[in-house]
Length: 450
Image 1 (cartoon, rainbow, N blue to C red):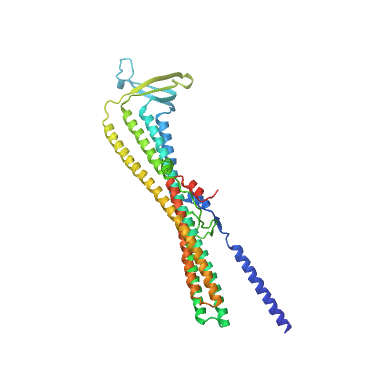
Image 2: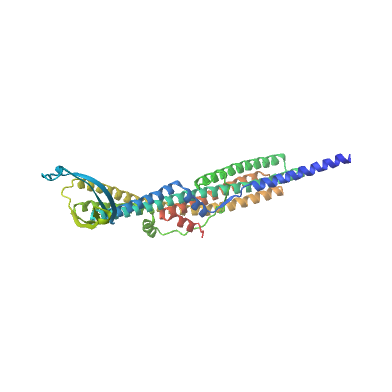
């Protein structure tokens, strides 16, 4: 008996030790959640977003185009050439014939070592084309900034969606806590004979409903984190944790009269259209400059001779002027460029109106959301007070728990209204930051982050 008891004890200890080691191993294998602030999410999104990466390659391509135009038209071109040959010549083929001359002379050899150089002195068309490519490069840089602004706005919205989902989970869990306390109180009162079985059943139903709502809220929160991770270029199985909860932070209403002109100087999409227009104007000037003469110089210097040891230095220096006598194509090019300028002008005018509309809409939404937050906060305080009074009445035995369940539902609606109001206010600030331009800087400033 003692040996059997000893074996049983050892088996129990081994089982307990193995269970604890397994639990510790599982805990060690669990990945540490990545803690994300809004600014961290924005930076990761900018680094991983395909739209931003493609816009960056367009800037690199435009820089290469500018370098090509600069080197091809305005910088000197230098090349070197050397050759050695052995040849025969048919004199009769060149019109040289005499009774004492042979028809074919040779073979003879010669060597030539030479450097060639060419430089344009006056070429207005190429100069204007270079200026147009520089302005086009500026437009591509503004397109890259606009792409970054759009992605910042998108990532901020995804982060805000996750914050709202997390706030709903917290709210649902607090309601489960209240319902669990209500069920315990109902059972105690039922055992004491001061409450009915209906009160207990009603509390059980309320707790089940709140647990169901919590499960739904937790699932929505996990889905919002999946969407956030996908847009940050992270693996979907990477655990994320929001470092900044949803909170309300008031913002002084900016003055629209000063906000609109400043937005035109900061909006990357507007500045891109402006650079494109300037580039088209330079192309028009380049097209007009096709009628002007072009002045260039070119020359070469080297050595030539029948043998390597007998080469003699020779060279050439000449100036060249090119005139365009007839160029019917210039009229068609001028018409094309004029239509492009008009199209850009229409786009600029439309975007100017759109920026003004975006600013006004963002300010209206922010002002309305601020008022909604104030009302929702008051409603939440009142609903919390109503729940406390209903709980006191039920505990004192002056009422059943119908009032408590009703007050819990009222508090749930008040909490949801507050979450919606704060979310709308934060989203309005994000929209205002996008409308003003320099979105990333404005979002960080509006949210009160360093």
